[in-house]
Image (tube, rainbow, N blue to C red; front, side, top):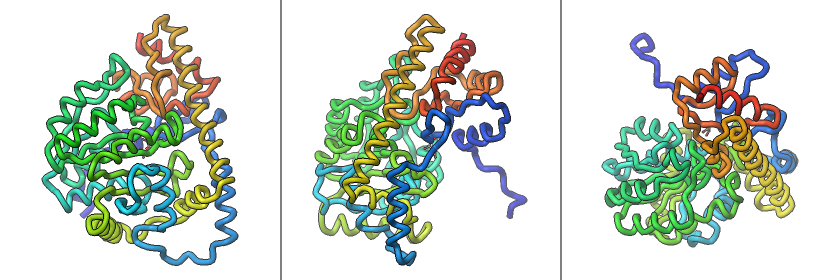
Length: 394
Ligand code: LMR
């Protein structure tokens, strides 16, 4: 079997992780994979997570299976965190998954089972695994205009014009906040206008929210998604606990399928549990239980929020400092968008060859499309990165 196989396509984010790990230069700077880092380059376990884990270690008496869709308590806290009271709980089918990627994968698999003819509308650009999973499942993908690189913001008219072409039952992927890879987010008005598009076309929104709390704040980052959920009859949400709880390797993810209460909700829940069973049976429990423990305890919730606020502030400060350093070395404001954008990523206007030059000549690691993780910057490396970018871009 293996003799006839050819190598699978490489994911550009995973590829850059490998190149960075293999680089022995001490001055190397990791602005690649979307993992939060402190000023000294660590990705620590959050204190609220440690405290929750200590409680779980003390109290947990069984590692027996939970349920195919995961734990109901985890569903409830995540539903509240993400949807707030935008929709009645009776309308939401929830299902735990291995990470946000697992949620994306299981949602698209459900679409493939239920409406294989549906087209998946994906913003241009998007997280590369969106297209990879869509293609892997044999679903048809249509790219829609999203980012205006010259303005460093949304191509609002292009997006609305493209999405007006969606058909009933098509799936439109949106990033809930902190757009990956551009850092350019939808405004409150954009979400309202998108709701109008969904009402007019009958297409179904699919919101991927992997960075809630990294943009403007936990509540602020969910406002757009919530305003949409309150207006449309059906909506799919894939959410992650990897970033905002720092639980990357524990694989914390959830699907929230908003539908009509009663039979449609129950069928969606049964289908999601069934699909879990076909793929991996039971979702991982430990990280989900940590999240549930934190969000059901006022003190732990406050501690976690304070840590999350500090992470967000650091990323915002890094954005400002890099934009200022770039202004100083280039004498222009062409990188001002870095300070204005939100979340973990911005997309630098660089070619793949320039990304390679930054890596080879300056030991600075970006994803090949120019995506930069601002959490990887530090006070010490910001001048070095600014100088290198100015030099490479000429
Ligand atoms: C990223 O975008 O870098 C992260 O979400 C990690 C991943 O799985 O791609």
